[in-house]
Amino acid sequence: MMKIVHTATSDLPDGRQSPPPDANAVWAVVRRADGCTHWRRIELAQSDRCYGLCNSAKAATAMRGSHHDER
Image (cartoon, rainbow, N blue to C red; front, side, top):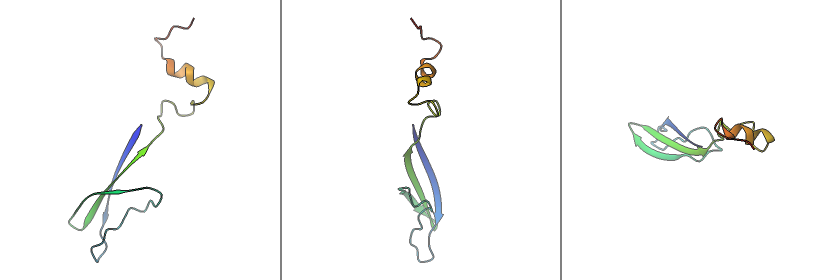
């Protein structure tokens, strides 16, 4: 699953962009207007459906659904 995060920051007094505080993320500038910079980052997020079950024997059972016939 992909997660898209948006945020806005106020530009510095000299007009330079002030990036978001999360230094471990790669942010892209979407647009600048009225002394603010609008940012976006795209990240991969683990699906809630598989959370806690992936790489386990329970994962196969949980992902089958009620329409699956076991033989």
